[in-house]
Length: 494
Figure 1 (spheres, rainbow, N blue to C red):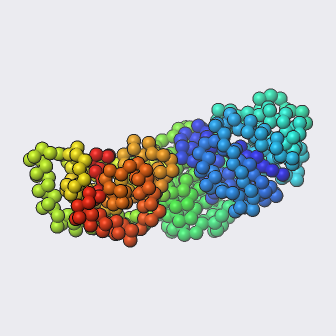
Figure 2 (cartoon, rainbow, N blue to C red; figure 1 turned 120 degrees about the horizontal axis):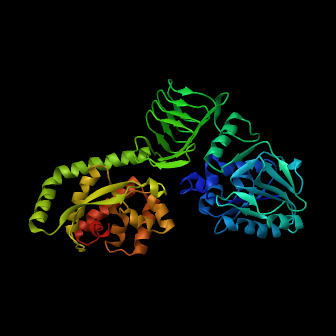
Figure 3 (tube, rainbow, N blue to C red; figure 1 turned 60 degrees about the vertical axis):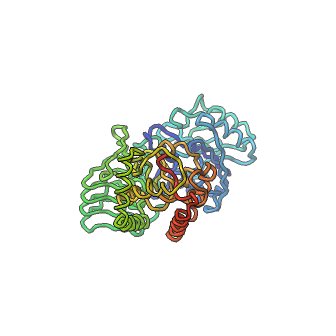
């Protein structure tokens, strides 16, 4: 049997949670919802999957690959939107000469293939789940049923007519669903309390209903009320309360005095002190109140924030650069002061603070944070040693403040970053901004767009402390030798 899974990925009921990844990849306890579906079907012997994708298809393909991890074969089909999904399913099924299991990427009913017959449509609470046992693709049953199926505005499967000939409803007792936030939390409770059979949950079950993954720091005065799941590398603070029905994804911090009840905390999220979270979904700084059906972006990072990019290596590197900037300014402050005085007296420029997107950052623009870099803007574009005085020296103040690194990629504004091609933007967001860049050293200040991409792609792949030291040395040598390839004119580009 072959499974055709319609996973178009967009659902406005999640109020922006689907901006950075498709809905079927939403966390369901310890893994993406769609992964539960794949493992549930693979456990019943299905080895070939055909996925129909639309919204952010690259995220699904990156997550699942070719299926070898599960001993299966995965194929992906891209459609413009949800309204085209069943048309694509008909095309796929027409070329298959064996039974087809039609499924939805946002629902998972409880069923056993050996208990189903051709023509069975799975219903939960008198609503079709999007799952059906079909005959071979060339059969009349498959064609007639697929011709009557469509999706509503939220991407949910619906009938456009009566039951096709040869089909019959088959009620199921349990069904996990991502139809909306309320259904997600209901499904999460069923996973946690074990009422949905056949699912795998990772981590160690410390006691009935309490799963704790590896490397979790749990304060002795924290309270756990099952069922609860805590992902790997989490830290639960003093006086925090988790549960009942709480899921904390991997790499999260729940700070002192906060409570998480009947809620889901997505991986990489910081929950501040003394917060009461009840019936909510939190993904970094986005909070979805399920009862109100409302979504909020929280700008105060001491309340909710993103931990994905807060790695110890970056923190140490930032403090290293701040120390170097302090030492340099300690010796060069007279030069900087004279430069500022000459600039002000001659009216040849002005000190400006230019905003740029702080990287590393995730792909969701809503989570981008802006930092500032100081420079002396003259409007010129000459490739001489004046760039050292106009940009590098005042930029050291920004390094000392922790806004930028000494070596990295060119800092870019939000507008510049949003206009970048997707592949370039993806690698750019994974690295760091600096006063000295690979592009400047290799191609010079007037590098073309292709040269900028080449330089930043190379730096993203080879970034290391040793490589940064090498770039800094080359930059100093070229500055001293007067080749004009010292540092890019950020005053002209930002």
